[in-house]
Length: 211
Image 1 (tube, rainbow, N blue to C red):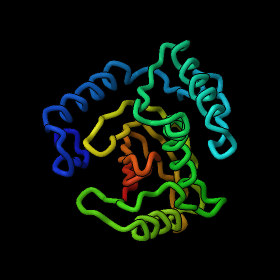
Image 2: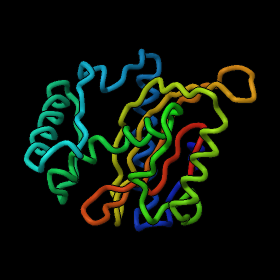
Image 3: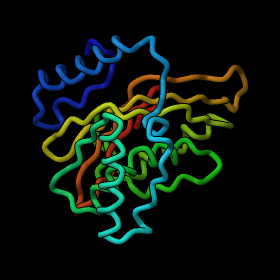
C-alpha cells in the first residue's frame, strides 16, 4: 500500500476502497497538523484515572464508561463504542488497548497475556497465542529499558468479526546490546475481536514491532 503499512485486507470482507479512504483521512489529518505540538488524549482530559474493570460491578462499569465519554465530549473528542456490548464490554473496550500496550512495553513487570485471543494473527497468517507471547517476550528481551512517550487514539474500522483500532504511538528503547537510544513514532493498529462478549486482542502492529 502507498502508506507502507501492513494491510489485513483479505482476512475479512472489508472492501479495499473503504480501507484506502480511511487511511487517506488519517494521512490528511496528520499532514494538516504535522507541525503542531503533540499532546495525548489523557493530558487533554487532565489525566483521568481509569479504574480496572475487575474492580467494578456492571452498574459501575456503565457509570465509569459514561463519565469517560462525557469527558471526551466536553473536550470536543468523540469515541464510538460498540453498541452490541454490555456495560462491562464497553468499559473494557475503553481501557483495554492502551493498557495492553503499556503492559507489553513495561519491562519492570512480567508480561501477562490476559487479553490475548485464542485466534491471534500476524500480518500474514493465523498464529496460536503461545507464538504471539513468544514474539512479545523476544521483543522485550532486546531492550534494557522501554519508555512509553505518547498514545493517541485515531479511529476504528469495523470488520465482520470485530474491528481494527488505529492509534498514534511513540516510544523509546535502550538496547541491551548498547548503542544509542532508539525512538519509534507513527501509526499503530490493533486487531480486536468480540469473543463471548469480551474484546480480545488478535494482533498488534506498532512502529518497531508487530505480531
